Amino acid sequence: MPRQKPKTPRKVPRGEKRRLELAAIAERVFLASGFADTTMQMIASEAGGSKETLYRHFESKEALFAEVVGRRAAHISGPESGFARDEDPETALFELGMSLLRMMTEPDSAALFSVIVADLPRSPVLGAIFYEQGPGATLKRLTEYLRAATERSQLQCREPLRAARLFLGAVVGQHHLKCLIGGPHMAVSEAEMSKHVREAVAMFLAHYGSGARAPKKKPKASRG
Image 1 (cartoon, rainbow, N blue to C red):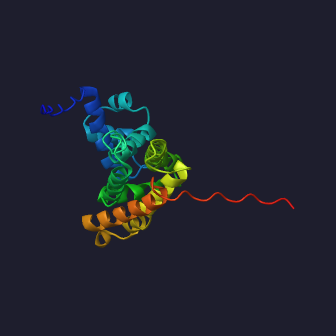
Image 2: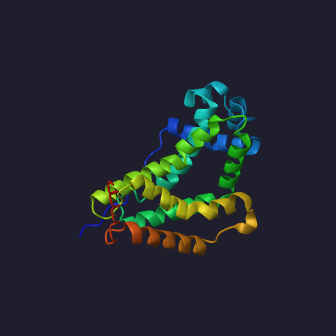
Image 3: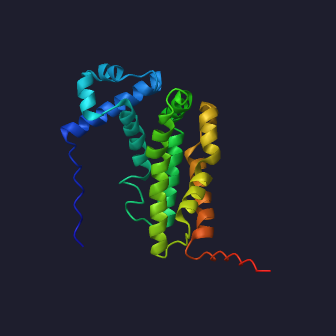
């Protein structure tokens, strides 16, 4: 069998590379100053460029924040995830769960959540941007995967959206709260994360797996 040639890394165009750099710099400024108090001029100065150049890449501060959150979500459920590779449900769900918990236990993630909560009163649109680009995007991708896996007879998800919400809740629930308010002493080890995610996947597959017993239909109410 001929050996497969290793994939050649995609060459990032200069414009896209600069966009990535600006998003990374903006994230640092948002974390340091908060969303409401950050200006496009502050980000441009930190990047060593002009505000006009920044506006050529991002039409507004909100669009720049959406880019920051969207790129974080893409690491969890984007083009390189088990979803995109059409992995089997057990593998894809485990990868998703581990990616979520690793992201949540990063210090910058907890700081970003704190910025959003603190700035919501002054910038109500912030919550909608964060949900749409972050948790909402992951929920959508998971729902689409569960629907496709059901069509392939790998799962039995009659309501893929509800099933997706239940899985994400099982994975992130208590860990999310601990990461937000617990501080460094509440850090979760890789072994604990793995055990937690495997249990969540096992519980999900016991109910929605292809060999699971189909839920009984509710009896129709009798007409008196």
